[in-house]
Image (tube, rainbow, N blue to C red; front, side, top):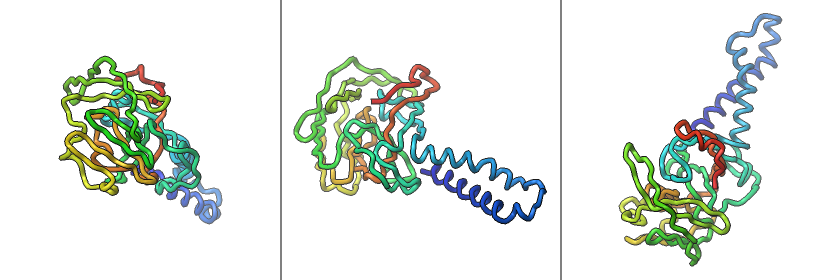
Length: 265
């Protein structure tokens, strides 16, 4: 969000300088070398314009800062997010102009954090408008049907300079499978961390988990590292106008070169 505003500001400034120079200042110089600020604006304007259009309408890179999406995404992963999967939106304002597709369960989505729109979060969509979600004893049920899971070998990973171990499952949404981690000794939701949020009345929380009905125009997000994720369980639903795009590829990780080119699912 902050970078988009910066890019737009630079685009407007350099574009304005180029326009004023072409319409007025250049005629007065009559062969005299361009001042440095005009020369720089002419050089950078097309580059800034290309980057701004690319990031606004096609793809945008993001870096994964936390382990909430392990094992799907690792800390330090650089990913690409397609900006047109769900609609063509106005840059910065994020207002949808042309719908191009629907957000689906299982999609890995980058969105603006509902409690602070300047922050970008990434989670997996587990609930779409109208879904009735229940999460108890680490099992997810959608509209009365338990999501199919298969236990795999335990997963070990580094977490804040220490090693952690978690149960690993293959979880299946319709025809798509992905991996999740759970820590059996942790509660399904930490009640002390649940905040007040819009639509809170559509959820019921207890010591064993929660039940939520996703309101129209909103989505319910959870991290694949279920017990190490701050997600919709704690801060609520994500409005459609907060959606930035769908993550589809890991392009680089300085500590895990083999992850380059990994397609996400």
